[in-house]
Image 1 (cartoon, rainbow, N blue to C red):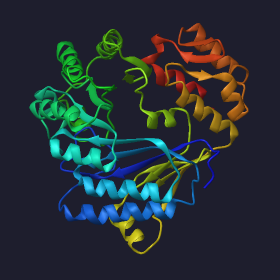
Image 2: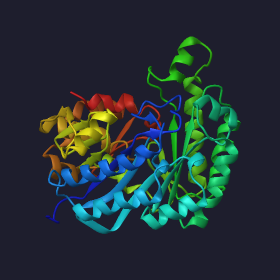
Image 3: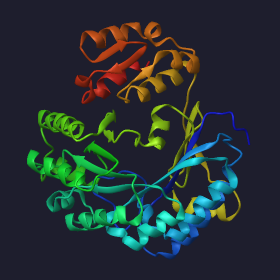
Image 4: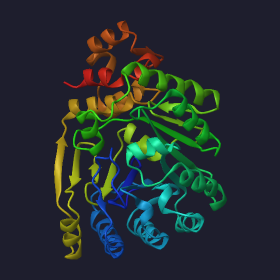
Length: 383
């Protein structure tokens, strides 16, 4: 394989859950019989083998997401990671992240994951508040979250993220502040703080539409966000993306590949791949996916979008402006043959007048005022 290409990431989707959360619209299925996990592991390994000719970029990151990847046994994770090493060119400092549900692991499991090769965890706490967890439809409670967080460091992980959600129906500011403070008790390397956003198909969205629950007012959501930014900065975390904060040098390298518009390979039903010009998705049907691989064929894909040069540049602008440091214009011009400050002069000028964009020292970036309104800014770069 060639080694002078830009690095890529591999995303591996594990679509099983004990129970699908009420806010989730990712492709996932209830795990009815654990024996299917072994069949699925073999399918993922086979897809990794079959896809190896599609992207010859060196692999810098692997991310196991879901669903609930922590339903797999550490030995199954180890075999999947071994398949990546067998079929792809991997760097020596590979970041290998895995999402973990607090209700599905114990210290022994965590130690097994560490031995299997996982070196970064993303722990789906979402909240330490039992009432909020019930609204979200999570299967763990606050005590479960505290218990597993106490085990993470002792299992050998010093690089881990805690996922939290704000804007939960009826959430009080004090409850959100307590969630963040509890999270920092465990000294995570990284915090992801996401505003609750719902697809209309989810059970929680239907409850809100039916009037049994209410979302927070926009102004209160914005206040919670601003407080989060200030608090985490005071605690030594650097905001490097709209919803993500890290200790210096502990940013999620896999997600940075997305935001820098680098290539990534998606493995598993419903997983998305990007080759720089086209996004496609493995068709999200588990039975069809595994049947294809058991017969020795790569699973069917559907093209989500094919971009020309202008669309590709606009897509990279939208991704890059999510980063707090924004876009370095000379690098962008070299990659995409687009002079942003000329080709998008009118959009930039309007956003500057509104106090939402800043152009300085060859960098284009959102102002702090725009972080909570980012979609309104980013949409203006779509032709």
